[in-house]
Image 1 (cartoon, rainbow, N blue to C red):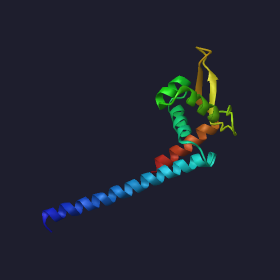
Image 2: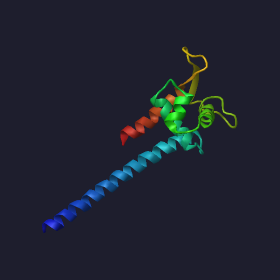
Image 3: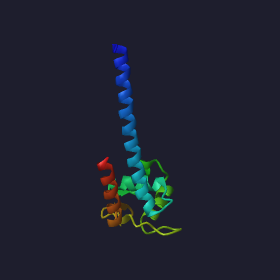
Image 4: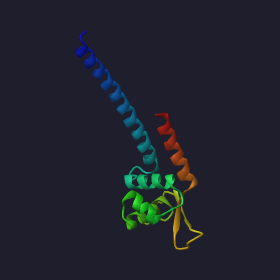
Length: 130
């Protein structure tokens, strides 16, 4: 086998490994999305993004969440309402709790509820297993 053929063979092997890795990542991603669909078959992606941001930085304000997600404050407020127990239309998810800040009473801080923490722990297990 010439060196050019050997390099080509190594490239094919590398492509196969990369393809298998991508399949694994895609499978993991689909498993994570399925966990969100178990909450609601039409669980919006923006809700998942906000939930993940809250999980990463519990105690953040609505304004901080709006900046981190690049979503408008009114949109984030509606999403947090649905993720908590204040959903206007439909059943609330109960994944997030709003607490009044002890330092500034007008500021609401966002935390995972026990149900939200359980969901995020399950998603973490799926990701860790990948």
